[in-house]
Image (cartoon, rainbow, N blue to C red; front, side, top):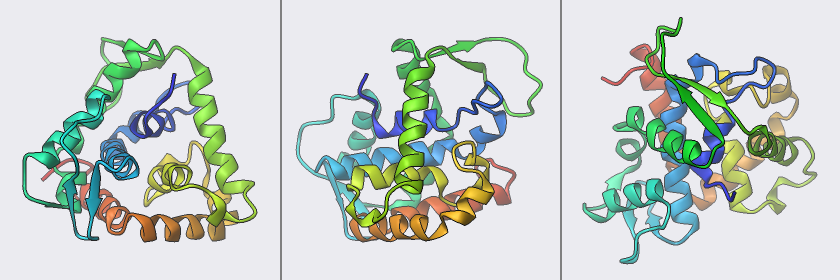
Length: 218
């Protein structure tokens, strides 16, 4: 299965050492999924930005249902600021991605009581191959690329979006690894900012503002 960038971001939240999607990662995953969708629309030439606002391009929506919903949101309105696009409906972003991955047989949702304070069904990974491949690709691009500037923007986008601002996404790279490869991460972030200015800052601000209200939406 060819995974979209939002689907890849979602699967990067699976902790293989714990055998689960840690409930704490739900807090900020929605923002990352939204940011990934916006990045993919720009990568595909279906949106553009001036660094502050984003607008849709073209008249044909993407074939992927989640990307199409974000594109239609852009298409229906005047150019919108990054922060509003990343943040305002992030709490609704997980469900459509989960539905796609369930349809593909990659995950399963199990109803029932959980011990987490966060709401939602328990999500179980049914096919490990896709998640392992995505996480290994991210690790390789960060830890084994002599010159990060040689990576494509599509390759750069995954580690930048997954690792921005929040160390709890350290299921792929832990804190010590993030320190060890700080220069590589900085180079990836710089390339991302040159190509899609404003998006990484909006993601960071969204995570910080959500932290201030305990991970929710004000």
